[in-house]
Structure formats: structure tokens, C-alpha cells
Length: 231
Image (spheres, rainbow, N blue to C red):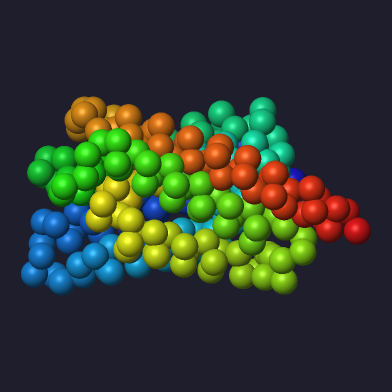
């Protein structure tokens, strides 16, 4: 296992790219509609940043890049509980640095657009439920493709499966819930622009979803995955 300092840098860098690429694409789509990337382009940007960073740094840190994922893996006993907070710090630092870069390059209208909010016609509680459910499914997918020794696609195909899930989730659920599924992705812009109104949804929802997904996965398949890994 790599030392914590190296793993923290990997987590920070991966989250930096996720926020820079994913959130940046969302702002680009809204601020410059003539560019034409649209919903599918934004969803693809999020999915591909997760995929490429998982391939680039997954072998170093595990490729979480998301506090909800770190919490879920710890609940499922696939990640040391004592290392959750250092990972959270690294993820928040990496994401915040991406926001700073965007603030330097663009004006305040762009950095204000980095904030996450429910879609039109969706109230806060509806967005919260969608964030919980989607993040729970996301963590269950990660636990299966990245930790279950019985899965034929475990390991080399895991980043692809995880990235594809984010693409699908951002496309289908994102327009309604805001499409966070990641507290760092939503909290970091708010630390810069101080628009605190909706951020509670995207802290509570993904963290609760990560814990719920890990609990469900552990109760259904966790014991079997441990036995498979030990044989």
C-alpha cells in the first residue's frame, strides 16, 4: 500500500480534474449555449473525468474522488475508517483548487454557476431523495466492480463501469436533482461563492446514500465477496 501522503495527493488531483472538467463543462454549457455540448456533453464530461482519473490514480489511492464513496467503502469494511477523514480533506482541497483556477480564468458569473441546485419543478426534498437513491446505487456498483472477487470484470473494467454509471446518472437524474452525487463537487464552489442555500442537499444526500448503499450491498453480497476474495 502506498503511504497516505501519496494517496492523498492522488485523491486531490483526481477530484481536481473532476471538478475542473465536469463542473467546468456544466458552466460552459449554460454560459455558452452556442458551443452546443448540451446535457449529453456535460454528462459525458463527468463520466469521462471519473473514468480517466480512476484509471490514472485508482492503483494508488483507490480512486474515490468523492467523500460519499470513501464513507460507503468504510461502512462496507473495504476501506479503513481511520483514513476516511484524510481522504475527505484531500478531496475537498483538490476540488477547491479547481474552483480557484476557474475563478482566476472566468468572472464571478461563471463561478456562481458552479453551485448545484435542484432542477425546475423539483423541490428540495425531492432532490434530496434522488441524490440519496442515486448515490446508494453508485456505491453499490463500485463495491461490486471494484471489490467483489466473484465479479469477472473486477479490476481492469471497474473504472469503465463506474464512469458509465456517472454518465447515465448525470443524464437521467442530473436535470432533476442537480446531479451532484458527490459532496466535494458541490461544497467546494460554495466555499468560494458563499451561496449556501441548497448545499445541504448535496452534503446530506450523497453521504446518506453512500452509507445506505454500502449497508444494502453488505447485507446482500458482502459476506460472499469476502469469501471469494480469500480463496
